[in-house]
Amino acid sequence: MAEVHNWHLEREMSYPYPGARPKRQVGFVFDINRCIGCQTCTMACKSTWTFGKGQEYMWWNNVETKPYGGYPQHWDVKTLKMLGPQAWTSGGYAGKTVFEKKDGDLRDESVGYLPPAPEWRFPNIYEDTATGTSDKGLSLPVHSNFFFYLQRICNHCTYPACLGACPRKAIYKRPEDGIVLVDQKRCRGYQECVRACPYKKTLFNTEALTAEKCIACYPRVEKGEIPRCVAACVGHIRLSGWINPPDKAREDNPIDYLVHVRKLALPLYPQFGTEPNVYYIPPRWVSRAYLFQMFGPGAEEAIEARTKPDRKLFAVLKLFGSTTRTIERFVFDGDVVKGFTANGKAVVEVPMEEPFYVRPFHDKAHEAYRFNEP
Ligand code: SF4
Ligand code: SF4
Image 1 (cartoon, rainbow, N blue to C red):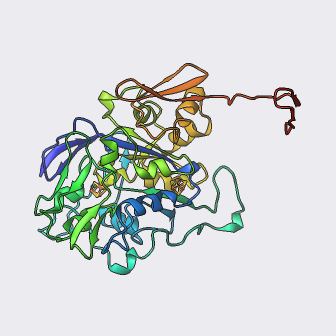
Image 2 (cartoon, protein in one colour):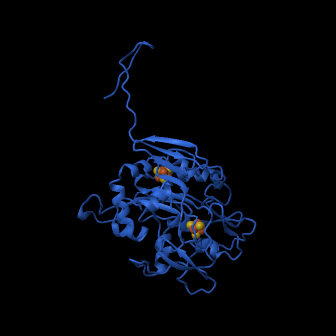
Image 3 (cartoon, rainbow, N blue to C red):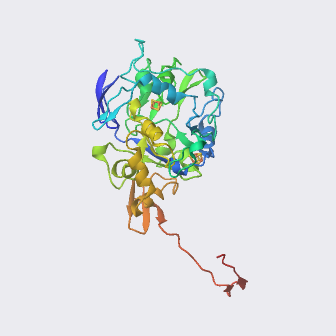
């Protein structure tokens, strides 16, 4: 085991390999508040990557209903139990990560488990099922009864547990973009990665007998385009791009701005220790204790910022779903937010206020009468 720095935990931690951050790291922000659970993202991914034999049960992207749902069922509850007590102090995370909490099996580099087949049955089991007690009544903004949609893909972790566990060294993290891939020629289907991934985002192809996982749509990313699940999102809840570590954060990079500058978007279960690169804007109506467990101690501050967004933050939230190109840099002049590609080309301009046109009742040029709805 090597010692590496995990900025989510604000401390060093053990990992099977020495730390090697990629030149650039692909990153995502998902705004849970906007998701309508339509599964368009899920089907966009399915119809692109997992429609073959042996992939029938496989959902690289899924949207599950929390707190009861999970794909595979109970994935997070089971892993959290294995971790033991998870304390956060002013100095960072004081509990154990999946790499530090051994389960007694000397084979294992990290804790984990192999879900039994029935637990992979549904990508959104307990759809729209709330929890809580109704006798307290509803109180806004925190409901005593709540559910929300959690959008899940591979986190292309900085310290991937799947990679650390593979006895064949078949899993690798690309230095050019941080995308985590399985080398299909090297994989022998031992499923150590399936066991080790705390997010359960490595899956087993029952026909090819190898492990497969979300590839962050790398053929699109290489061309400066956004992944399919991001492009297809009906609710415009997804933004993809590049995430830097805190000491290299750029204020004009929309992902850095949301994660580092405004601290609005948070990692999912940072206590697992993999430093995941998908960040979530937490839902405003949910039990704060639940959000604390899921997103760590930043949840309250993030909800505060999301509830009263200032004009610049609102502008960046308007970039979600605005273009199919990767936005590397944004500029906001107070009225319009512009997004630029890597070579400086402006690919999107979003006004803060939509222009409002009142058409003349009688259009003489076309000899037409037009009615404006109030
Ligand atoms: Fe590996 Fe799981 Fe992290 Fe994806 S989410 S990189 S499969 S450990
Ligand atoms: Fe949610 Fe967007 Fe997926 Fe619909 S397409 S379920 S809004 S993330």
